[in-house]
Image (cartoon, one colour):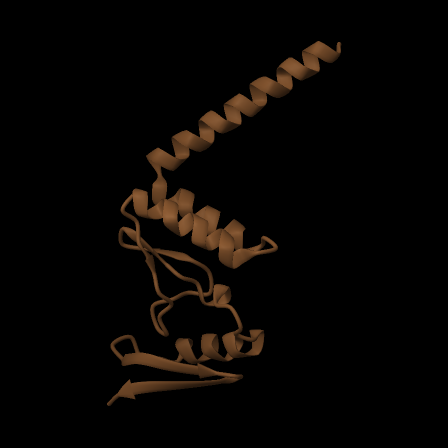
Length: 129
């Protein structure tokens, strides 16, 4: 009976590995997006994201910098690349992210907000008139 469980466990591990590899090569953007989201929850997210970023380069996928108007709260697919999520920026308080989200909802679609200076709990946004 023990051997059957061991054999089933081995086959499940092999199937999971095969499926993971298939997803990575068939849908690389979605695969790396999921990996980055999972890395955020790890004890050392910065080093995990760094490892994933190195591997993304082998697939010609760029990890785009956070952008005040283009970034979403979580990592997101942007064209053939992945945009860094605002929640994954180290050192930014949740209240700042909350204020930024509210601000982004009020930005007109064709606004030229391009730069943000984030210091302590203040977010300063420069917009061209």
